[in-house]
Image (cartoon, rainbow, N blue to C red; front, side, top):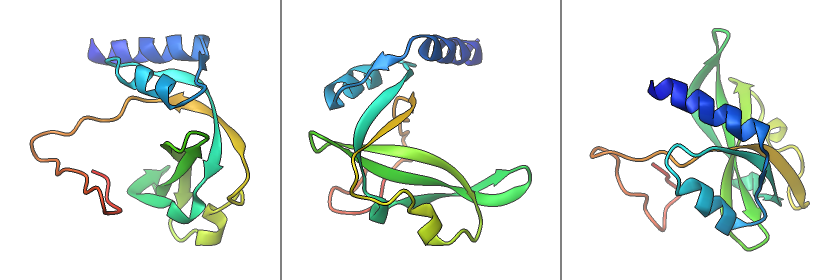
Length: 130
């Protein structure tokens, strides 16, 4: 039943693109339980802060998801999953498009995952996110 609820929420999100003008709209969507939104945001990629989410496989091949911060006009940061790359992809290839240019990113906005009793706190001065 829970999986059907997620599928239904995704179908609704794709059928009704959301207006996501700023971080306040993102927080409003994220505050709703099992909320998903499909829409666009504008910002600048911080390509030098990209990270790899590993290990991930695709069709049996090892690789990673490239996660890149997108800085919105108000200064807020949104993490963008830019997709899967095969293991061994050169860092320069993962930094395209070039940073510094304002761009519009369209995709699915997911609520943040909730930690559990074993999830450490995110250190405010570190580069770690749990």
